[in-house]
Structure formats: structure tokens, C-alpha cells
Amino acid sequence: MSLIIQAVKHEHPSTNTIYHCLYGYYFKGLSKAHLSRLYGKSPSTIANWINKFEENGEGPILHLDEAVKRFQERFGVLISVSSVCRILHESGLTWKVLERRAIQINVVEIA
Image (cartoon, rainbow, N blue to C red; front, top):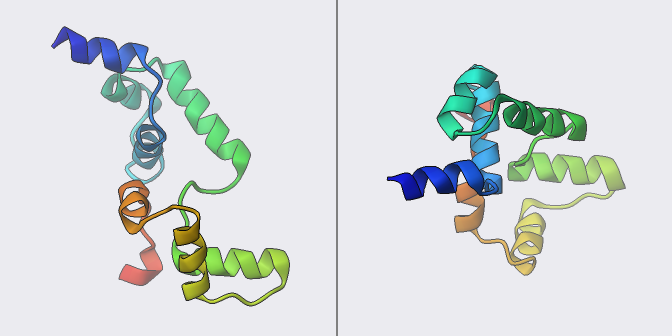
């Protein structure tokens, strides 16, 4: 058990861990103190993750329809969802990788 605790407290978190923490903060309303206990990190570390996320100004995960919209807004060129899928595939991303990282819920799609 002490091996697990040492790994959690002394190793750098994966990107996925940080995203789950952000999900808890923004979507579940968990406090920084609660997340600190939950993830075995100091409150200042949790605050740093949140601050870095807020400084970037955009979320970590985009749904395909959101990616298409942002691409079109930024470049002024139409692009299809299938083209976005092809680009992601050519970049070495698979559905499994994307699914594992997807923690945001597109409320419009489920409403």
C-alpha cells in the first residue's frame, strides 16, 4: 500500500489525471481542498492546474462538431467532420485514446 501512496504523492500526474481533477472542479463543484485530498496533491498544486487551465482559455477536449466550428472560425474554410476524423487518424489518435481522455459532456447533444 505504501508503494501506491508514494507513487501518487511523488510522481508527476498524467494529463488524464489533471483533466479528471478539472472535471471534478468545474462540473462536480468539488472544492480545491477536497480535490487535494482526493488526488494526494497539495492545494497549491490543484490551484496551479486550475490556473493553467484558465490561462489557456479553452477546454482540454473538443467534440468533433466543436472542432469543425473552431477550424472554420479560425481559418475561414469549410471542413467536414470526416476530414477532422481523417486528420486525427493521420496524427496517430484513435477513438480509444480520445474516448479515454473525453471527460466533458456536450449538454446540447443529450438535452
